[in-house]
Image (cartoon, rainbow, N blue to C red; front, top):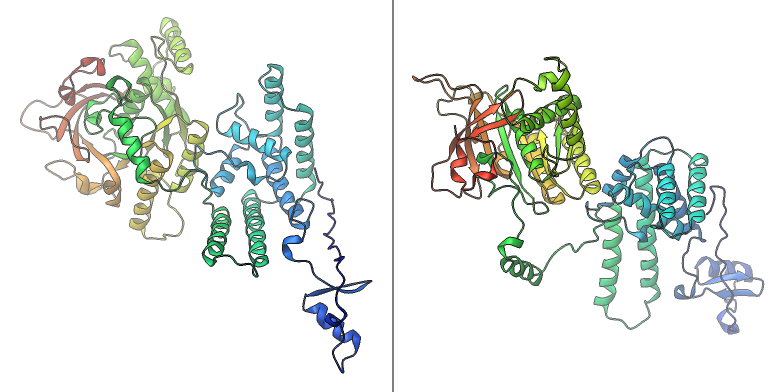
Length: 573
């Protein structure tokens, strides 16, 4: 591998062995020889040699660019800078590699192309980095030490048969390169790499095009080749590097439709229930991993219990096998974990209990001791192992806290998580109005919220997942005699426009009869794009929530579903 101090030799143009007619270089009349020769050489048609002026070789006969040329050496330098920054010891650099992938414009299911790297050694290192990032290796941190450890373990087990010494030397060279090279912000290093790589793609194509000026080729073919080179370079420079087919034809769609229509019922993908019948009613039974592209909105006034219901839905999805990410912009990691664990304990116990509440697990409630604590430890081990209390597997449950994160930061986190966990099917975002503002909108809050809603919808389609968005209702919902509707979503109508369903929850209005039971809420079905599979009027349903454990106890919409095994423990209020 070249070092930062390496100097690359320039390309030498060989003199033509063909003799040149004397008349072609005879001095013009009345001109001294030296000024005339200088003029010819300045025109670029000849070069000065000890044998006299000789014509420049055609472009197609010159040596092709390679890493030994100056342009290739510059590109190799940028590649080394980029990989050295990702391999630096001492911490996990997954965020940097995720940024690089986003700058390239790669989807979560696309690997970094090997063609981006000039040498086999760099291709191997970059491939290992990308495999770790996408969850294809046993290690999860990205740095040189993690790669060394993983390769040694795989080599010892016979799962990797490459040259361990060669990759060790390459890693050492890159680490040394990073120490000797000038420090750049990683985003700047990505920008420089993109520009250098785009030039490497575009300029040789232009040179080949100019070299064919005298040939008899259709102009349409020349323009198409030029257009292809321009598009390829532009897609790399602008971050639109897509390896999958950008558009599909009718034959692709027809084939897929025929395959799905002829698939036996027992083999078709089944929707995964949220565990809340009122939600499944408008979701055609739940979510289907890998086919998600929708946003679903759950909104309420402050203090009604929208986060509580969202936790219940998240745990219902996980218990039914969906892989999901619970992302909060207002709760701490400890607060999220306490709510998830409280729901797990309530399900494990199978009955109402004052123990193991959210407050207890946050250290704000009862002291749990003796047999109760031993039981909690067993449940914690099962929860940590990704198993239900009866030992059945759960879907992968991820959670994160990002206080006041902007939509750009949320999209980055979700895309990186989807790349590392391809089975991720659902993101629960708590909540839309607790996110930070994106730059560039100033005081125009309405435009910023509209752009935020559009970005989340695009994220769902880009990553093939469903996003359950928790949102806030405006003050108009407080005095409404008929309950909240979609016009009460705070800030923007775009959130409702892009949503496949909107649920607005509120406490029942006081009437002449007895006060409603504790935890009873009304779910107003403000929008259901896919309709409801029931002849019953279920535009408003009643649920009962155990708020201390974020657990659904009863749901009126259960009447619309035959087969009570779908919702164990859920009663009809």
